[in-house]
Image (tube, rainbow, N blue to C red; front, side, top):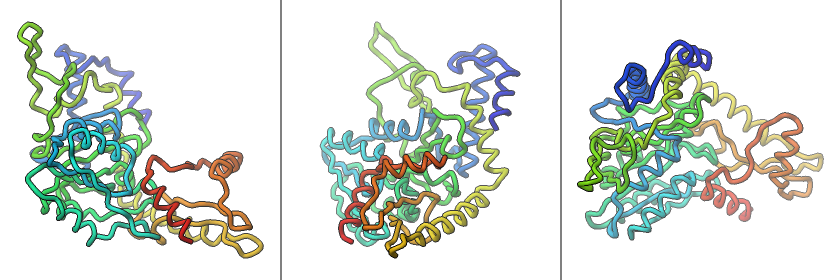
Length: 358
């Protein structure tokens, strides 16, 4: 994958795609090839979806937060289980006077009760814009929330933002079947290389709602200083500020082709086998006095979950071992663990609540 990308860069000379000279035109063709590859991978029609390249998934989320038409009669609904970049959109909503509400999780599985979710969706009144955000897969517990929530929320008049960053590396997302309005993606999470490139898959109908108060190079067709005038591009390029990481973009279709060669279903099955084995063996660990060594947070089995598992380790007295000590000891054995709250404070807070209750 990396070799193929490097060979392409060694063979050709590419220029900034904002020009029309030969090197720039060659790069423009590769950028459009990358857009087409993304649409094809997610089975998304260009008549329905637009690919907007960003620096990362957080950049895609910020784009929506800045441009979504929040007003005093608007609503922003999100689950406790969300990445901080989704939580951060609440500040854009609140600045505009919109109502922000969180849907809690049920313990110990850390799932959302669908009947309660429907109550929240139905509680919105008036004609204001409504945005509902949830992760297809939790980056904290690994739980996979039902994609059926997408059409459910849309039936209640909500725009849906599906954070798919943790989901799509090992699961098929078919945008011809489920059609969320906004889908942030991180490519390095999918195939490791390159970093610094993500995208927003935006449903064209929803994209017309987004409105920007700032423009930059590459986003306009006309800017006049004398006439104090500017016109945005009519395509998704209106949201791609300045110069794209154009030398990195050719690696995207290469990486997607690599996933297709292996088969995303094969990857999914392999991860399911590994996570099931890991959960079983972690939970079987115990001290000499019979005290359990590990506590898991989230789903008990491998069904409807991804390859992330969150645990605490306990000493012989039943006290939690500090996560920094766990990380230090694991690193000494050349084991890479992520410790802390994983940029998901809602999931972490619910896990701590679960710990205090037992």
